[in-house]
Length: 91
Image (cartoon, rainbow, N blue to C red; front, side, top):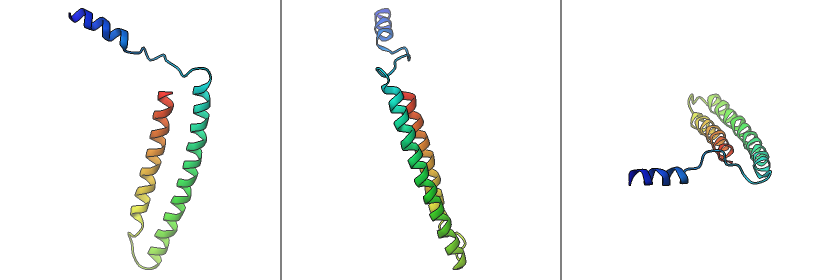
């Protein structure tokens, strides 16, 4: 019984060499690259906005105002790069 189950599992588990049909993988990788580039551009603009917010808060006398926005931008960068890497790995 164990040997039969082992053979069935080996027959079902992919070998990892599967690819998208045709050049779909290349096109999807290119689209993901463009989307990632645009997302990083928006995050750079968000980082500039957070820097302006921190500078304005410091001029008003608040030392740590806006630092939460910096953390949000850094987490968003990690999410974008992680998601793009996972999608490219799967395709």
